Length: 342
Ligand code: EPU
Image 1 (cartoon, rainbow, N blue to C red):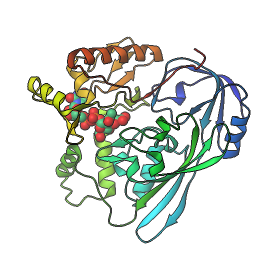
Image 2 (cartoon, rainbow, N blue to C red):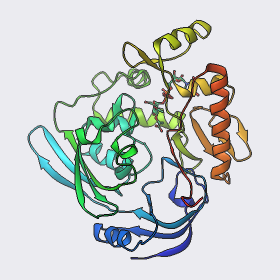
Image 3 (cartoon, rainbow, N blue to C red):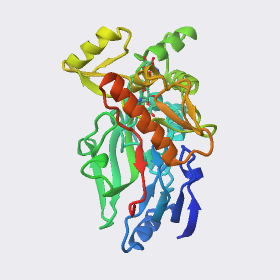
Image 4 (cartoon, rainbow, N blue to C red):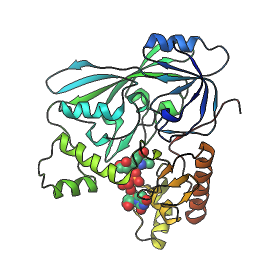
């Protein structure tokens, strides 16, 4: 176990925030993970995956455990499906491209989502009509305190929109070590209903798209709207799209007939937070090194040296302004991390 001290986490979070870890260890095997967990006596370690869905508001005292478990193995297979067991530290996009290249279907719409496989179930990542839960079979996890291993089935994970048991009852209790996906080998169920995907396929005159075509279309759309964290620090959508009652929505539609929306069910409507933030005048605005992306207002960006606290201040301003203008509360989608001893 290679324990380091006073380590900058700038390269370990896609926002590129220079917070420091008092102690840091990167684990590449489950034994190392267990060793790191049992070395802790009186504090809770912070578990770091791909660092793509968090905002580090402060330095972290205590131990940060970076999950770097690697490997993709065939868990099961029949004529129609393959089950792949993927270690938590595998990069999500590389895993998607692995499937696309081998013609395994189900995750192609989720291309280019930053982060690692191990954290993908926590918020049930989703994009362009597909969510992680659609191909999720199970995941294995280690209990932080007892070190017992547990397998969570699809239903046990209680997936919802950007939500799972790991954000609720099981929050901070387990460390996901692998995720098993059920992917199609034939008769792929392609999701092309998203407008921008259809536009690209039409433009390229692709009438019968395959998995690769969809992945490429998604990559084109994402690259045109969402900043590459390697170039401009960000954490994807900073806020969740709020769900409001149909009555509230109809009132809003009277004053803003152009408001985009997704119907959730007979009683509820989801409104794009990006649209609300743009209406509030924040799109493309910059305050020091903290800013709102010019092509997608849902994404907050770090131009270089913004602190987590500065990004958070901007998020609060946006939240308050949207509340005042529309009487809608938008909630962060990213995890806000601050030192537990504060
Ligand atoms: N919109 C604006 N202004 C903006 C941004 C969006 O008016 O600055 C409008 C768009 O014109 C469109 C609507 O809002 O009518 C929806 O925009 P978009 O298609 O970009 O999707 P989104 O609802 O803003 C969600 C996910 C994204 C995912 C896309 C595509 C959430 C919080 N975000 O964004 O996920 O890629 O749909 O499926 O649900 C992420 O989670 O990090 C992420 C990027």
